[in-house]
Image (tube, rainbow, N blue to C red; front, top):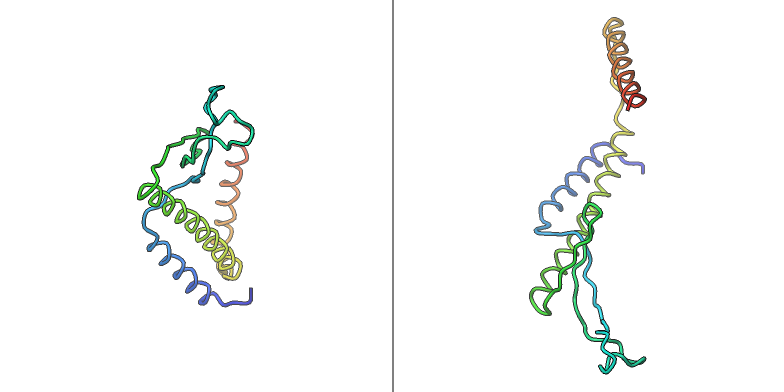
Length: 140
């Protein structure tokens, strides 16, 4: 990527604007299922029968727990399907924003500290900060 910081910041701003236009979204997937009822005398018990259905299901896993909800064919199914589609767009936009920010951070120059005492103070502060992190890591 041979771009300037200004061009990348402009790209990031455009991505933020796209996020604002997303409207409602939700995680998960919408699936179509055919199920066999288990009754031996039902038509679905035959080998060639796909099962009862179609049934439309919204599935999501949040915090390790799976949730599922039956959806009615029509406006409800269309609404949930659009929300799930917008969530996928949200995830793609977030990935693009992170990539642009990574590039901005890579290109942005490191600030120069001319004052020697201020530089030593900064180094001392950073040593303490990272030493505290190291002791927390090993004491836990």
